[in-house]
Length: 497
Image (cartoon, rainbow, N blue to C red; front, side):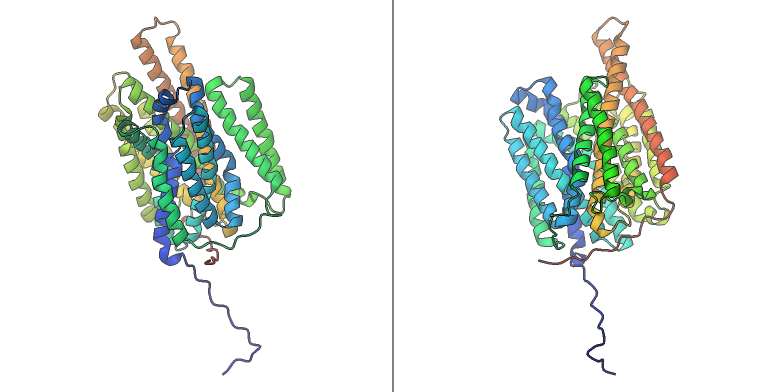
């Protein structure tokens, strides 16, 4: 029977052009994610060499790290929203090329000011890149089984990237120059951008006019900037410092104002439904708490290995290699074989408990400790714990988000990590410094006493980090859902151009 001209004809189903290229896309976004994560730590090991070369003071040294953290942490929500509005392909490629350019400038820096400016520019482009990468992943992999594998790989990179950065920083600094800790980003970014242009198809770009929530953008950016700066300033100048107090107070006012603005906005920067969902909120909290506690491993274990045990930067980097390998193996195995059957609820709390156990193990360190018997067991347990946390939490953090909000939801993952890292660094550094000075009081200063005092400060930080992990275990056990995190959001239509 023939159809009349007026008979409606069903439109053909949209074909996702990413489908045949999805595993290559995973490689590209994985490279971008690795570059962003490792760049938070790769410069740490190279910093003493950079200081000796450029001649800046100890008081100024922290700005090489802080400039990146401030720009990255404060602009993530805006970066995620720009990806939603302009298309993630465009924002992803711009982020890669901008990051490469800033890295080249930083590597060639002849002065402290140029180096700090380049690090800030890296943070700006990382804030574009990181949400776009995760947003692309969440909308490219729609099959539940494949989504689990993809997020396993991505979660492994997120968990191991900081440790890989320390290893790579040690290798490059010892064998080449501190400048290669920045130049190396060109070897990641340029091939990834070239591949992205060929592999990715962009959504149709919208106009920014009338679509950017200006009050929300200003309050969120300023609030996150004040928060990260306040905690960074507390690390160097103390919690009672006037500027520290003013920044933290301003952050509280601005972030509360941001929530009030978003409740009334018809085009919010961050739709509150993204963060009020119980599962996603618990995933973001898990990222923040795990990031705060995990920083104790990288920060204070680095000090212990180099200052107490006399490891070189290269040896320190290799000391963290077992941790990285275990994170990768655990995260990929959990995502593909366990998470689809159990959901995140039993996994993330178990990871938090293992993180607490590793911190408690490290509280037994002393000035005469050895790597194999005193450090390696704790790193292996930590690796299993991080693998259990990052991949399930990352999959849960983007589960069920409307495609048009995937970028800003992805930005919340990195925001949790950044804010958690800033809080953890400031809090644990302050506690360690106080414990170190308290140990010296009443004792005759000597090389042995000073070494014991430093180790006492590190172990104090490990005690507190264990407490943060236990808090994370309680929060994730109470809030994470029992259902399996294997469902994918509906894929967004994509248009080749």
